[in-house]
Image (cartoon, rainbow, N blue to C red; front, side):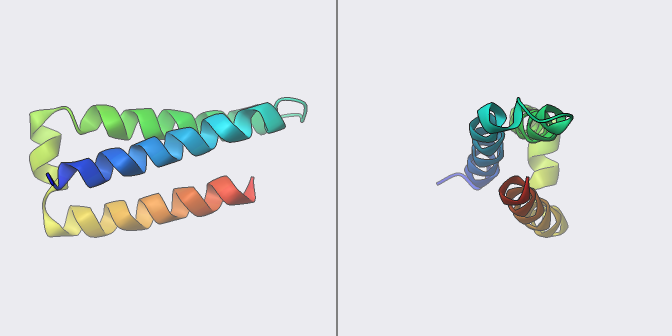
Length: 81
């Protein structure tokens, strides 16, 4: 499997968590923005996987470590909101 697909799976996961949380957050003041944040971050990461320059940057070891920490943090954030 192409290593860039792991980034795409992470982006799908974060976007999906934001979309699933959104109906539960609409009635509460200011919480819609929290779910929208997850959706937008997921979409931005997915789009970056399609740009050749960012693909090459994402495949380097330091970027993998930073992305892993970022995805883990976003998933935890998604569970906490």
